[in-house]
Length: 77
Image 1: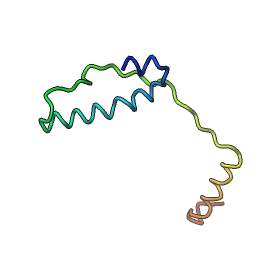
Image 2: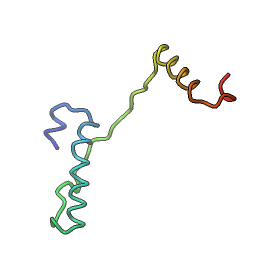
Image 3: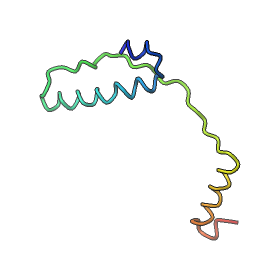
Image 4: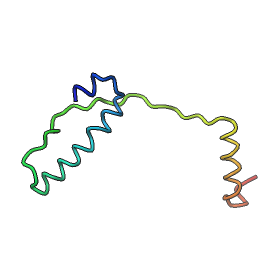
């Protein structure tokens, strides 16, 4: 874990690396395949902030046009 953090990876990348391992070990413990979960107590960095996705005018027009093709006629003016 320390190596992942030290390598400069984004918090979300570190989480995506660790969380599947946690799930695998939880299942293995439930099935009694392993005696302990080595990921217990490992602190995963918090993901802060997010990206806002803003469509370009062209993408917005494509979405509007696609809605017109599939929407109820009474909903589209």
